[in-house]
Length: 411
Image (spheres, rainbow, N blue to C red):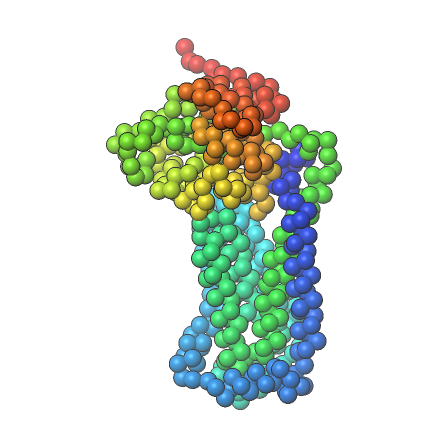
């Protein structure tokens, strides 16, 4: 969790975002209470009864076969297996904060659903109108709520990546069809399903809101330090900042016949690593994180960085603010992004690495080995260096820290 230096992810969680989460939570809860009021099994002529009668009269063999098979995806055993699989994938990619977020959402969803079922004790639709024989209480629908919570959580996790829209579309389709299957098969009333959907939204919103609110309160305990937070994370451009790219070779750099590190790169990273977390932030459209690490390993740099943020994985390129938001989220904690003021971007491209980073609220160091002139009208970078050997001292000045001592050499 974040400390008291103002560099925790809570510093990047603006009040407007928390207000939006609160509005979503309140709207979801109000919708649930309205549905609970409408959920009266003793009124078969109401909307629930009419929908049930309509579905019963319009079933087809093809739809019945499809929904009977599809609804099995919402069983607790299947969703548990899917959750474990996603957790394992996140752990393999060292995405612990996203894994914790998914685990909390799924646990709360299951526990809350069971508690509400026993609170309302609502019966299911008549057995003679149902395709399947199901026991237990009906309100809210467990299949619908758990499936929607899982789908929404996965979509939130995927949002900072280039898969955000496919993930959001698949999540919406999965949750929608699961709810429809419960109504079509006659094992739930319509209001059971609607309640499951809105409660899933409420669980995800509440989880995020609580985390952000607690984090924000912690940051306010030391407001004097939040005004000028020290650097915690260094984002480094890849091509012509860490490794040479003269533009004569194509394809992923990991497969190039010859690769070479920029002079002083390894020494600079070794000096920085004890004090900062180091991430490569690159516009490599043909290289994802594993490809970049493979290339870095060829020059002995892979073990000196904590991760990679690639435009291929993110789906956006520097200087796009979305790229930097994804980078801050990647380097944050507990599912929250790092505060922009606690990060610095180091790179050779003025528009992408300097202007783009500053527009996103990060500090910027311009790596300018050719000693080119600053573009007219461009804001001054926070620091400018012509060789990577000067980077540790430049960052020490920015973070108001003691100078980073050069490594001792044997002999």
